[in-house]
Image 1 (tube, each protein chain N blue to C red):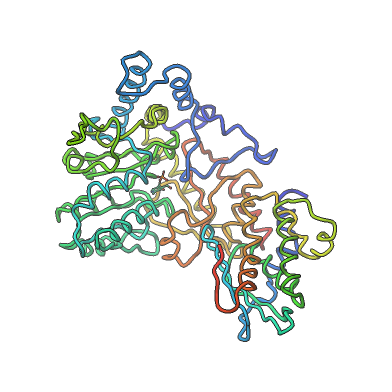
Image 2: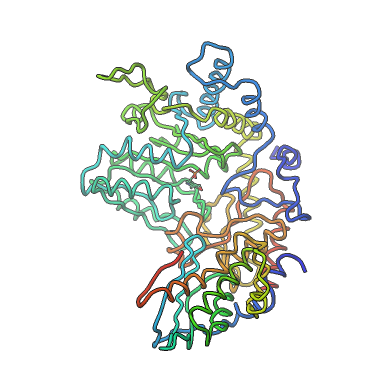
Length: 151
Length: 407
Ligand SMILES: Cc1ncc(COP(=O)(O)O)c(C=O)c1O
């Protein structure tokens, strides 16, 4: 596989073309914005957290490159039904993956579909694209209510 | 006789390299910075290997050699832009520094609250932010001349924005985001008709057109060495003698003074007054070598060579389904900005890079231009004197590959 094929895997291209959970959410408990001023990628991430601390549903809106959009699409799928702590742990594993840190044994398994972003670490200028939505999500989870902006 | 691009290729060591192991570099990001010819590196090397000395202050031979070469570049720059005298040439660290220097040293003291500074909608951030800062400091107001859908300044609107409150005009000569060559002489004449002084941001222009400050009649003109095949860290501020005489130094320190006592300091003559501290000596010498290099080729030849490549690239890109050119002025330099259905500029840039084709993707430090065209970013191709028809072919093949991936 050449370098770009490794980055733009079919799964990523598919999620870019047909993003999942790509809509507004009227009953969101948390919403945050992800903005990368360098390339203009700009998203809103919405989620609904129930009383047990479980993420019941997620959605996102906005525009950006294929990597950021596919990352949000797959992330919003992957986190449904997870607790906030589980989401944080998954972000750490994902962050290690895209920045090229050696994965710990069990994080490899837990990543599931997110593993398609393994090619990103060879494109240092694109790591921010892959993590943009995650940073926004972490911002949303860390706030009690309202909006935060992440870079 | 035009520019024989195949003889210049060998002067640029960076061009020989393979990208990602096996793709010969196709460098199409010249508006960001150009590659440097051997001649520039040799001149800088000579300074570091042999002539290292500080300038204007040594009795020894090294200092004298360094001073001679530094001052010789002033004359080289003077001739390059057709200035009256070497005393019209101030060395700075780049276009950005030159513009800030004029804003703080020349324009600031002329402003009262409600006065106006006029720029255009296609300026680089370097020709927006210094004026916003100045407005903040003085209560002056920044006015912006609009542009049309092709990326041309609307001259009539520009003229209407020149009011009796306008104190200064600062305009780009060639837009780095759109490629537009502005009707700068008309814009300067209109400002002068109202007694308003004009700074020309020539960061892109000097590398792509013959520039003649006497013919333009601009009061100030700014450019950077690194976009002109020279080193980073050095730039030029040209000023008319009267304009420089009315400008206050922004930086104080060594070399810009005649005498210092705690009671009173006498400033040095112009232009030394504006070059406080030890300047980038090697870089100034390198800039001199860069200008000698392009002068020998001839800027008129460079201009027509790059325009030819730009037109070919623009036509070929336009023929690719889903591609839209941003900036279609009839008067353009060697720059093509474009967007593509279904493929974000960032993705285009990454795929092109993986095939050895270096372009820029983003807002090009001209976010208001992006807002004007309702986009977040573009992919931008910009030509240099060493680019060839084969480079255009590689570019088009690579963009077609993007289309395959994202179709
Ligand atoms: C039109 C224009 N003005 C100003 C600048 C700023 O130049 P520098 O960063 O060298 O100071 C640039 C560089 O991108 C430019 O293209």
